[in-house]
Length: 558
Image (cartoon, rainbow, N blue to C red; front, side):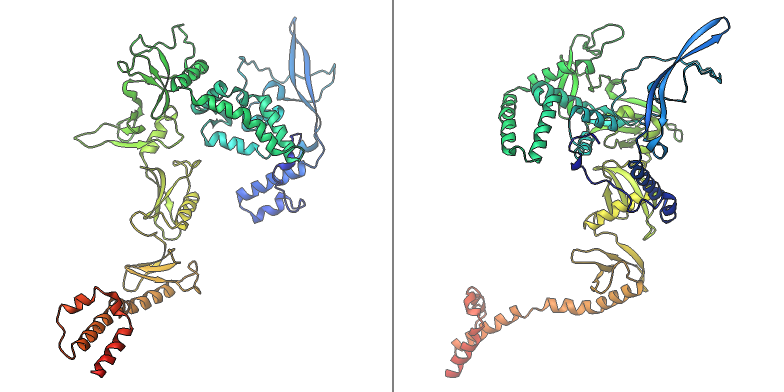
């Protein structure tokens, strides 16, 4: 690789023996594992092969069409030597390659070509394609930004913080990303310039090579950066919004086809639209607020209907209208309208799903939740997927597990659901209103299921209200029903005696006797009054173990 500090990237994943071809090991692996091994094996072997020899070529073709002579042009790449391409060819970001990347057959000047087919196609000039993950990394390499060990982390941060999203393998800027970029370019312009970042990367490389002192590099950076931070502390929110509004004008207020002012409020007709900040983030609002309450998202698309309601279509089963609405707690879906005071069926949108991307098919799938995923292999109980108050979840009995970012509530499968449930149970939480469901071993002869469960002090078996701890010699994963029944029966047989012993502690019973003996000795045989044991209770020192011996000594002396 030509990237700087490539040695800092992680070690390559490669086969332990390159002589083990994918065909040989395929019989020992499942389909996904075999595909992964084939990918690793082919890339490893291809990396040791000769480079391919490609020649960018423009072919001018002269064609006769009756009395006319046509000049045709074909551009593309001619493969002179396959090299590693004979084994492995990198996948493309787009299925349709442009003219420059099409491969031409080998040809020579003056060669006569046979006409096979004439295809007429219309082409329009298109804007440059958006970056893919691969092309963005390539561009960062060209600019000297980042290193092989940090590229993956950079891409992960961009998506995790919702600065960008992937659409058809292309990175598309989100509104949050545009706002952050506009803010940095307005108030920290120096620190987001390509040259500054590349220069800082060079200094960090020198630090890692022990050529410069890291403290000196940090001091040089912090001296100017701290001043820039201090300068923003005195800014008012209105100043920041004005700066962002000006920088994002082309995105927020694109020119209209009819030539009218894009900032003119469509509701009141006199107000000016500008960037505003609210409880749930940035939005576009009217300058005549509160008289005019027109709002719209940063994308510049106003709601299609009043009150932010959009019709998606009718449910084919019930015929009820499916709508997407803006509510007090965010956007939600609704099926029909309430009848006779009954609430219509509703569903919130999963995190990451934009209202503009919701169609009728997606809405019906969300309204149909919770949906069955399958049955748990351990107890045969159903596993459900749904959306609750705290977001998407997986349910198995009384165990609830949250769905992680990246998992689709509408597409998550049985294996992934079982994994999430197991992870939730391993943390000791997950059951609402009780302990985890555990693994069902079978029924007790007297009736009722016996389960083995993870507990705070180790695994145990449960039958109704009886819990029996597993001895260390027994493996909870290998525990049989017969062993569990024996543990439950043994615990049930000893439970009453244990409860009796706990109810009769000896410490408090001995104290009144000691007080009575002391009082009796003091009165030389007279019966103690009922109030004196209460008075003695106020002096804990009189209840020491030595008191009875002293009382006996005094009694014998008398």
